[in-house]
Length: 376
Length: 115
Image 1 (cartoon, one colour):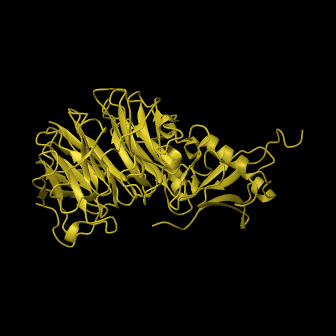
Image 2: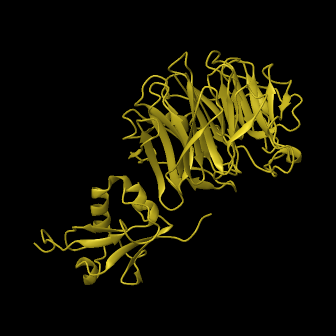
């Protein structure tokens, strides 16, 4: 029988939640790396026993951990993240130049085919890659170096309120040379040559907080999701607005439709229905909790615009948690399981594509990330 | 040759809890098992040489006490020796004799901060 393993990163450690395919009875293990911030934990599609964890703290910086036995045991690997060449400067909040400084790894994206290869999205925004099981990390410097002399160039990028983080990495399963990344608050970028050259892909995004709301960079993209069977279609949760692209990011259209608020962080796609998408609407950029204290996931079965609230099993009053950008995931079972974590320490699961929800755990530290592995 | 090849007694280094856990030395929040590490360091004994020896034995600590790139002490960690704050002294300043003789420990202390 199939199994699922939910990998949870929290403000104070990592947890692994395991269940069989019924997804009713859960075993909780952890905390791993107790006391440290775990921004992301993700398994290798090429070897599901190999897991990666980004461990960091304000005291001791960045540590990278790897497990080769599905999370039972872990060992530190290389943690030397040094920008390629002279790091230079980016724009600070007040518009002055600020030195590029490595702070932490936000997101890990293991290769789809090679267990020893993994990408890391970091703050201050850059993309790193390891091809030796995490021992060494090298910046894919073409991202920050793209378009020199243009106003999309990295020295013009500016951090969002949470820092200038590269938080989303999507590998195209149909084209090994194509990859998407997103940065707050620079926007989305794409490479078609394995990471040497990059272009901003933000046409159609409108951000009213910017001096030029339709500028090519500067958008606070919160997260992007793709269905593996239709890699040219992307869904984006922006600071405000839910967006869709049907041409690999060349252009975007708003699909917020009837959402009660289109601010939010998380977005994901159903495992078997490329037009079924999920978001976790949040009241506003200044009030990071659900509208009216009711925790609702919204689902669109039409690729956007028409949305329905999913509420069964979720608190519908007095709920003031947030769902962060990497804290939603789906499994590959039939029916598709959907999972999300909250800053209140709950991890909710639905084993029926969102119709019914129940907490797997409800008293963890604030949840920063949720990933799911579907195991044979 | 002065300072070369002189075998010093082991210096004693006390690590904060998170770094003890990372190094596989246990995670007792109170000084006790695993809190103290004995390291052979060539004279003249300095903070830099102590940290070099520490990282040689526990490579997973690289980058967690001194930042990569600058090599500077992380802002929320401090070095104390003989009840004196050595955090702002040169990493190459020679430590007092009682440290180099292993009579007193070199303390790496994490700031009481965070949430």
